[in-house]
Length: 232
Ligand code: IYR
Image 1 (cartoon, rainbow, N blue to C red):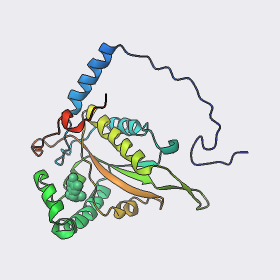
Image 2: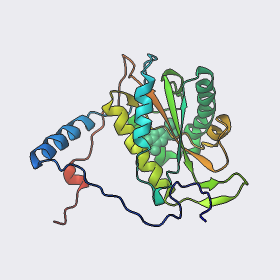
Image 3: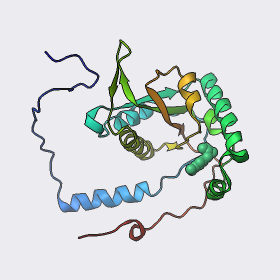
Image 4: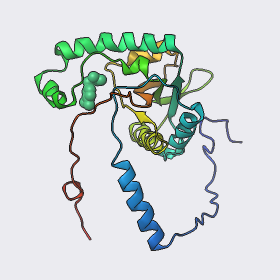
């Protein structure tokens, strides 16, 4: 008999089911792809958020989209902690700013600070309290069973990175702004949010509407030619 396990299908034999999505016409695909490309090119990382509330269901739906991401051995090694509590947001901000001050005052080093200069970032993280929600994404580095036993998870960085990409896409297409914030070190997040020892913070994603006076750096995206190598 198969032992109960952390992965829904762990150890099952391969018993495939049919997959027959409707195939769109080439025209439909072209229209969808061009529209998606145009819409995604309007996404910007936002650091100045309005305190206006956003519909919680939109955020829940975006997290559900992220949770459809492919993952190593389909182990879905992610936890999304949705924080709306102003007191917790404040504590996250204070702890993040404490770390960031050390970073900006020297830990990052000159080369890194030069790379960040065009982004206008600093140690003050108003977005952590202004944005109505923070989504704190944790990687499950391994599975921790009820007896404290540990079990391997595979390709955790890749899996969670893909899920976060899908989360940012879903939020943007739903009309919400977001920031991929990676305070470093991030250990305080697991402690503050009471996460178990198998979980490691991956990113804090403030979510909301941009502030009315929001500005963003004047960045240029690489062109398709610069990022694409064709072997066709
Ligand atoms: N974590 C710091 C520094 C920072 C690092 C990178 I790489 C960025 O793209 C932006 C910021 C901070 O949040 O300010």
